[in-house]
Length: 373
Image 1 (cartoon, rainbow, N blue to C red):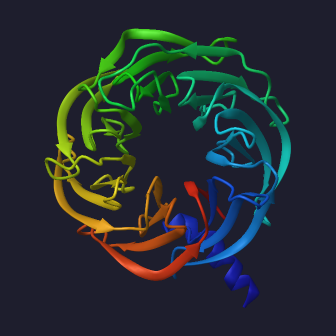
Image 2 (image 1 turned 60 degrees about the vertical axis):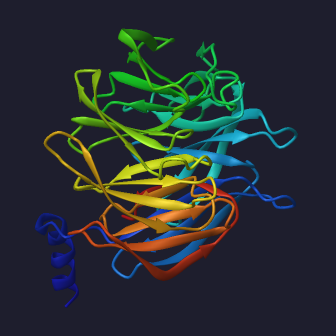
């Protein structure tokens, strides 16, 4: 019997049976009076149930996470605890067997109020986006997974017409699939800057040609997502709560469509996060303000255009959400509602159904997946 089970377990990947268990890593702001940073939950995509594995003490306010490509290391950008704008970068070793994280080191990140961190394809550098200082920094990754001192800083200048655009506010860096190009969203100046990326250089970012894609005034580009086939780029606009669609090829983008998330006249827009289903058939986008919705669109995979389907109520301030790797569940974190909602996805229609599974946890802003081996 044991031999039979072993054979079946070895055949499952070959038969295309989907992985069912994942570790769900949660980052965010640490509640006052607590000393917990990242939380790790074990998620079963077959049942939709979760169990707490670990919580990391220290390394406060890890508001965004990035994973090394081998999932052995986790990197966070940390908002300072003495003021609201200090910034640090932390490196952790991840134990795949237990789901526990061990701090390797922590360094100054070179900017103020970090809101996003990304890692290159070969695990050579992390890129950190700073909202308050309006800058991007590059920090090298050492062979032991630790983070080195800042090797490059790009400082943005300018402003926009919206009251929240008094200066530059970098909100995300996004690598292309081949790792050769980086897109940078600056919410404060309504633009996306485009860079060539070469991690063999100490300063790996150099302006591409063209180097800038302008949004509409007071759009506030925030987060970006490529389609699974890498033919299209979707950009959510925080201030206007629009989603802009671009065709992508060879490091260049060309405009396709703009679609509004909220009715005309709604003036409390707070577009936040955007993700596509693994099959690329549906796009989901979250909006805060006082709306607190996840909006569903159908995707035309030939031209990238979006068609509105419907909206869903979620826990207050859905700054971050995620779709599990099997495409079966959407998990939305209510930063101010202090609840994480689990929705079942109908893979045929893309529509969501709220389940009984919830996590009651405060101030979560980022969710990441690691497959359980």
